[in-house]
Image (cartoon, rainbow, N blue to C red; front, side):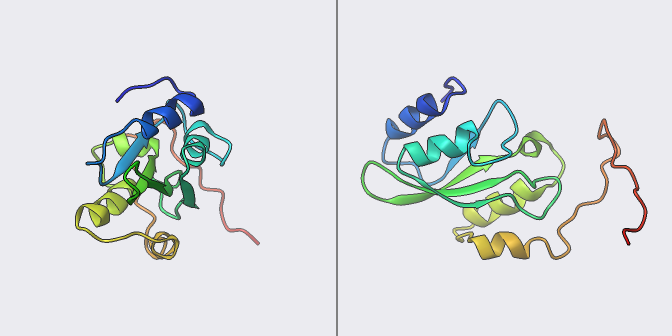
Length: 137
């Protein structure tokens, strides 16, 4: 479903969804950097909750995890997808999606544990590589 990038429109689209949805993945027009961005606000406006914002994995650090109650009363997970979700390279979004597709839940604690060894190697094709700032004292 494609809707304008406005929290009210996204919330209304969520409310209009049928009862056969088991996982909701939201892609925005821009990166989500805080809870006042369009997608987090839409989740809350539609009656959902934000479970965790961000993850200690890069690419994927701007992922949002939430819960939303469908019109039939069943609560389902919501992923606010970071830009890297569009990439064919493995990233944090893949790790979260794989767990949900296997029927596993993902909690805030699970998200934080992904940080242990969760930083992916530099991607050569990245337009702007990270600068080596040296040791921090």
